[in-house]
Length: 156
Image 1 (cartoon, rainbow, N blue to C red):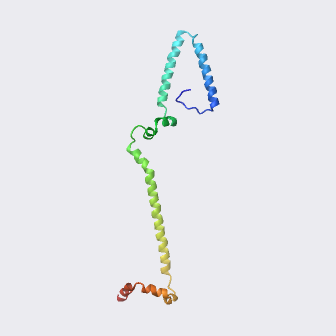
Image 2: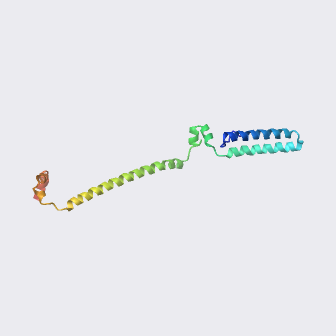
Image 3: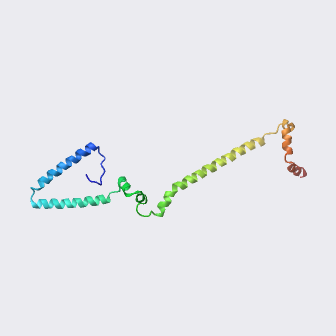
């Protein structure tokens, strides 16, 4: 088998196929000695053409993962040439989208907390104050807590 191809067959099947190929090649080699010269020349020329086409086909084949590992990590990651600027930008795009998403989520949660606090404040301020609250000592202390603000209110 060719050293550039990878076998996906079972090792036992691969061994049988290899043995069959060797027997076939041996039989063809023995029979080639008995061929006339013109046929031998045509076969040689056809073989050379087939080898040239196979070499061109191998050169045009995409690089497999196994060959990439053999090349080394630096060459495999960079591809040998410097990538274009748009390729670098495209590789940063997922990171930028993730960052934008996280900021959007944070802003959304902050906004929801503000709305929840505003709802609680509105509900507290909308309710009338019960008369018992005026006789509560804690309420009186709350009013006395900021005397400067109360004096300004009384003066106006």
